[in-house]
Image (cartoon, rainbow over all chains, first blue to last red):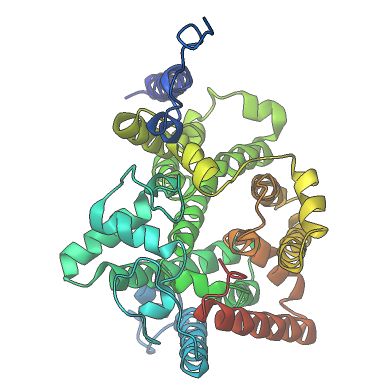
Length: 53
Length: 394
């Protein structure tokens, strides 16, 4: 492997890892839900059903 | 130095992987003397103390012996993870607190050693911690010698680290000694231009403690120190030098993926420490003032943390400023937590501080001796508090 090709391969690996980490982070931020809060949900109460008649 | 007088004599250094017999004696001596002294103090205090330490997991009655002496507080979480893996369940005494607060590398090693040796997971944890600490002392000796060119500095550095206040944590079922080995190992490999290996070790460090990912700061600034700011931006020139910077966060991402796949929350660690330990963040300077003006315990812990930071100022020199900035960003992370617990424990994994102190004191016998005696006295006092389960030492 020539030095030029070696440089290109290493730069490509580094760029690939960086892009993968950014994509993963954005995916985590978008889809993660606080698992402690999710395990203890606040029951939804319908205002309409409790409306005084 | 050579053995024998023949022409084909073998250098003594070569027999110990580059360490002379004197180096090995210094490092092993610091390790053995400090561990034996601390263990004896702990067992004597436990025998004299009328109220035994309460074992919150009720796994077995606690005794004044090894490994029980070194299983306290968070150790129970590591024991649980090594025994049963991660669980989303929390105990009724601490709602919201789950095993996801703790990084996986150390309990995975406990489990592996326990399986391979047949020892209990508690004993395996103590074995992992002590082996990692001894190995870390060798690596740090080599690093300190390389950075200073002076064996006296390296020797004093491992002595100060062995007797640092709360250094008994390096023998306990905690991650500190493993992190010390991984962080110092990554730095040594980086110094030797073994970039991919340095990145791999740093990635494992990032999966063992939350501040592991901050090694990228050291790697990045070391490149700046080597090449200058403009030279560091030319990443196409020797791009391998940047591999550790890119690889270090992989350990953290691996933990995030594991949490995502098992809980649906990649940031489960952050979620559980907020709910279970009420660990939230604030600006570091706000927390410094809050802790210093709080109760005796919080002001003492913050004071000791500030003293450690002051000691890190000894690294502010042309050849070691990246080490200072590495310590600084770690302190900013530690001080961003609104709880003062464990501030001293967090600080002692920043081994460059001990290098800075050693470089300043190595050829000044009286100040060096006084510093070492102060460390031994504080370490012994804190060991006594640790043994009886005092919440001062978490």
